Length: 250
Image (cartoon, rainbow, N blue to C red; front, side, top):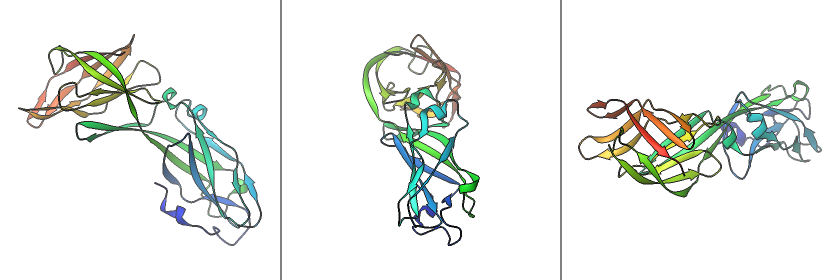
């Protein structure tokens, strides 16, 4: 969702012409089609105008994945335009967050990537919003990848079972489909190819204990074997001790 100030359609102010500014210091934009568009305003609408911007990010390798398509371009008669930011394979970088929300028996999974766009000092208007922090967010789409072995002998099932697995398109995020009955859960392999990200999430609805949440989970992956070290299985009445779930990726 764009900043509410983005609704401004006219010139930013009536002073020095052809200076530019962002509409606000922060914005969140959904990722779609390989490009995100960040709104930019200028102080007049006369003539065409092309102004270079720069892109920065603190995340490792972000500027290899997110790149400016070119300068922001205004056409004659318009005081508003968009800076277009292209993005490539974001499975090669780590998001700032992995969000997992319950959707019935399934889960919705999203990633967020913070970047910044910057206006050079001589091009900025007196409104002086010459930097915007952009949170680019993506809701992941999953596809089936068959069945996998889940060694839960030291985990919740206390058994060695087979379950279906899905993988997100364009990202190293996996989803086990209701391995313990009524709930799916998801995890991410970080860009280093070794570390697991597993936010606290409900993994099973137990007839006795109710919703069971896997908490304080750490994990590693080696030779396509994912080891989830469960800090605790938490239920309404308390928690069970540490456990381990081992997944053999296809």
